[in-house]
Length: 117
Image (tube, rainbow, N blue to C red; front, side, top):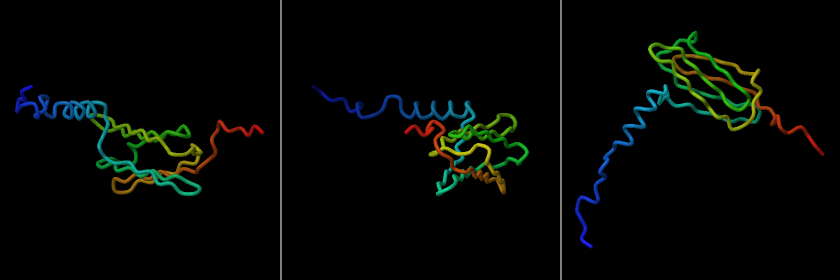
């Protein structure tokens, strides 16, 4: 079998990477990082949200997923963070300073664990 020297080249180049980048931009998925820090009694979520004001930010939590919504024009931003532990969604404390959002949530037990013996 003869080997063609062009076989080593990817015929699509970086086409798939460009498509993924374009689709993530259309979905409002921003590249700003979101970090989750675990402590004994709480979780702290730190998100970089440049060019936003605190009035534009809304958070929602269902105990396991934290949603951060930024109502900015022309396109709103939504970040979903899968939390590594269950939290009390009523305990959320929010601070925003210089484009850094910090949300602190108290840990709680798994609501499905109702203590059968």
